[in-house]
Length: 263
Ligand SMILES: C[S@@+](CC[C@H](N)C(=O)[O-])C[C@H]1O[C@@H](n2cnc3c(N)ncnc32)[C@H](O)[C@@H]1O
Image (cartoon, rainbow, N blue to C red; front, side, top):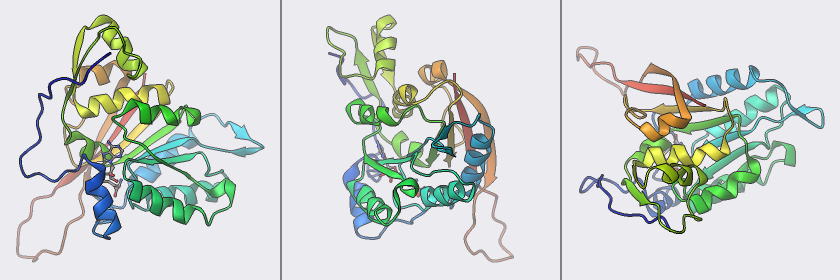
């Protein structure tokens, strides 16, 4: 079996546990979350719609049904906004799948969904995106046209590296990682790289992974990711500012919109 070995990238002492479901469950249950990380994400909705509109139309019962995987929605309104935009275009919204490892996020999301008719209801799934056994449960919804990620890979990046070795049983590991282990006996994967490899079986050639991140180097120097995903663009976006005195000079801060394309 491939084992989780040493964890060479360790967490910063005292940093919040962004990589544990308990941390997020507590925030969501106590209403402590900001609700929208980085910004409300209209830029991502625009990118997703433009990508979907450029795809060849596949219909289901005469009505188009885009397949979108939303990573780590938390309590953000992003999924709901995408649903409304799809319905405005006459598309079905039940191809949108929201996935989070926080049971509380899933419970809250599902509660609102229950009020919707079936063609308008998005799917909600609890899954740890770094655990293949969880991610494999999403295969019946695949392949996705677009993967949407607002600061979820940022949270995942705070987790630790995983080092894996090929031994006699690699059956519980993602097929993409199994494939890599067939040529490299031992591999060390950063959490974002492991996420990228887990997304490969859920994607198809041309699937777009559209990300808003605070990091200017979120996808840099990840060789295993680069085997399967092309970094198509990285666009700066001025971050929202809080109230400041007009006499104070405050430097601009940027967030980054990344578009990665499945090779
Ligand atoms: C920074 S918050 C972003 C929430 C939301 N996308 C937004 O923009 O407001 C990160 C989200 O990712 C989820 N998350 C973090 N690590 C995860 C993992 N390994 N698997 C699934 N979800 C994860 C958290 O529960 C949380 O909802």
